[in-house]
Image 1 (tube, rainbow, N blue to C red):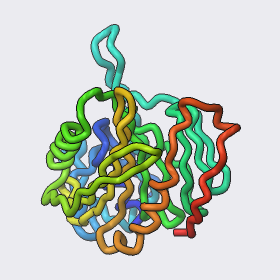
Image 2: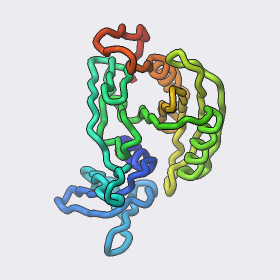
Image 3: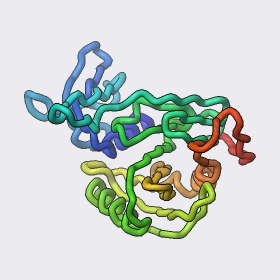
Length: 252
C-alpha cells in the first residue's frame, strides 16, 4: 500500500482538489475527500459525514478531474490539457512544453498525476515510490524573487516545512537554483523530501521537482541528480535532430 499512500500525498500537492471515488473489495464505492491517513485507516469526508476506511478494504482510488469553470471568457486553470509526450526506453520527450529528459529504466509516464494544468509532465518509478514533475510558469521577475514565491507556496501546503539547502546549479546551459526541503502534506504523518531545480528562461521559470519518502531520499538523490542533469529544452530545434544525453541511469 506504499504506492497508494504516496499517490495520495502527491494528490495533496495539487491545486486542483476534488472528490475521490474509493472502490472497496465488497463492490461498494465511497465518494468523498480523503482528509487524513491514520496508520492503516483513511479518514474520508463524505456528504453524510466523516467515515474511516481500512486500507485493506480498498481496491482503487480514483481522483476525478475538477470540472469547475471560471467566469465566462477566462481560462480554467484547473483543467488538465492534453500533452503530446512519449517515452522511448529511458528517453522522455515532451512536444507540448518542448523539452527532453532521461529517466531510469522502468519509469513510466503517469498522466493521472497531472492534477493541475500547471504540471506538464509527471513520471513515476517502477516501484511507485519516486516521482518527477515538470512545472513551467510564465514569470519575468528575478530568480531570487521566484524562489521566495515558490518557498511561500511550499510553506502553505506542507506542515513542518524545512528548507535543508540551497545552492546554485547550471542546467541546460543556464544558471539556476537547487533547493532541498522536506515537509508533511497537510493532514499526513509521513515526511516527503524534495529536491527542486529552478531553471530560468526568457519570461519563464521551469521547476523540476523530484521527491520520495524521507527514508528513501539519500539513496535516491544521485538518480534525481542524473535526471535533472539530462533535462534540456528543445524549443529552438526539432526534437528528431537532437542528440540524446549520454547520462547512464540505473533502474530504481
